[in-house]
Amino acid sequence: MTTFEPGQLQDLRQRLADACRVLGVLGLASGNTGHLSVRVPDSDNLLIRARGPAESGVRYTTPAEILEVTPDGEIASGAAPGLLPPQEVFIHTEVYRARSDVTSVVHVHPPTVVLFTITDLPLLPIFGAYDPGALKIATDGIANYDRSVLISNPKLGHDLAAALGSKHVCMMRGHGITATGASIEEAALRAISLNELAEMNYRARLLGTPRPISDEDLAAFTRVGSAPQMSNRVGALWRYYQRFTGIVEG
Ligand SMILES: [Zn+2]
Image (cartoon, rainbow, N blue to C red; front, side):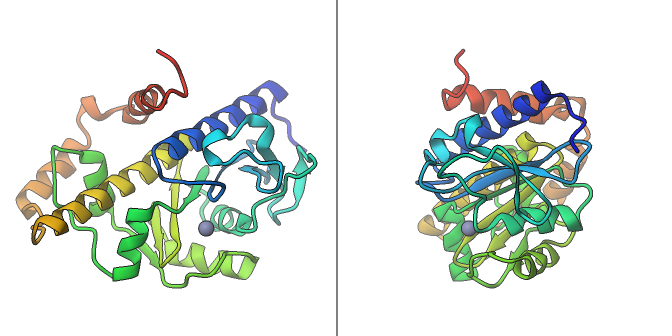
């Protein structure tokens, strides 16, 4: 039973739909493929973007297209004609089962990141002050899942969660990414940062041979992470992306 206020649950549906739209507009999720989820507070259930004939596509997701599902991936509430849990709901259920620190999961298929999973080329820490958030993705370490199958059952979800381990993001060979966070917005921003890191590595390889920044500079950025200017980075940056993508006018 959910003891959460219905209005607060609706707020989570709206935030989840907004995050889907932001990632869709930014090109991290094209067409209908991709889904985001968040834990329902005081419950083992999760909210997740639905798939099926009645969906609008990631970029146009509405709160009405968010389903509440059980830890086994079954619909708990929000059932509507033509809307079903994604086949890959088990990415979400099994990551939550394995990681109590994770509140939100993003699964999308950004083309540039997928190119790196196909070629086995590393995502190098090639910049610093240009984008410290994306640099942090590289220095925190990125997990890899070597299969290209749909994560369509709990066993495959378990394997993916094992591959993710204690990392924040996982690159899935010939498929896409799974990003996690302590909030919807943090998970979405990690997906955006991973994509930016891949875009810059890709473009650097077009020009020549990318050269990682020095260990000294990497260490300096680790220290910068605790500076007051970096506090509540998620909130400020998310407001930017909401306005940049037109999800929120301003
Ligand atoms: Zn997928």
